[in-house]
Image 1 (cartoon, rainbow, N blue to C red):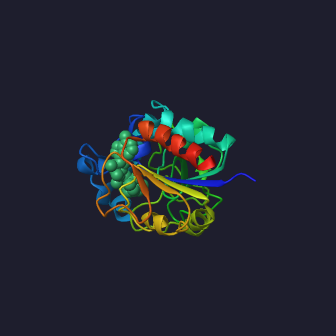
Image 2: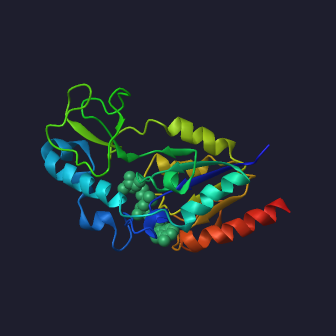
Image 3: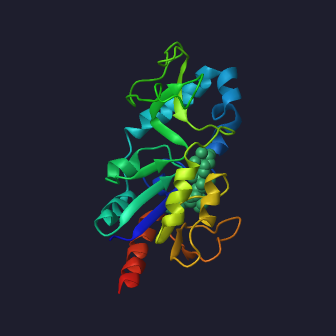
Length: 235
Ligand code: APR
């Protein structure tokens, strides 16, 4: 029976693929107004600006590649029962070969209804090179919107994510500032007695969660150190 390795990732794991994070020095929320571009009121007020913002990020996804950190996590599926719980809306974990990826904040590669975001008849894959335009309709006839969880919207798969973390034999956090809830609360559900690691080149503002080993490195360097420590555990 393979050990359950659960990995909780944030924007930091995609930074070395060229996708900017949100709250670092050159982060996205330093350049763009999250309250205008990543919430429902902003979409209602200026849908074109929101569609332009997400269409640019969708298109950019075609120009970036998974990095060594994504690839190592996919490789670990040979030794562990790996589940990735990600806050990221990019598809780099999947493209690296990870087979179990749970997106808490949606996916750039999908669209949905602006009347009922969680209507499964309306959630569809949508080619990244095709812009979502004003006037494009979802299956329910409403304006098509990105399948992204905007600020203030309900994170519908938190129960599933929490279950995965509670069942983990090993828990790893990579590249998240742990400031956005409910996602950030996942760190408290990992069992006290299991090995817990956090990979981040910076200190966590709110302090390292209790019982975590901080691998102070970027994701690309940190995953190699993680593999060393996992091998130690197996001895
Ligand atoms: N490798 C690993 N971690 C990195 C790297 C790197 N190369 N570069 C930066 N980091 C770390 C930063 O130190 C920080 O802790 O990644 C984290 C990025 O934090 P945020 O920019 O806040 O991103 P994230 O935590 O994923 O944001 C959570 O906020 O805007 C919403 O929905 C959005 O999912 C996002 C959520």
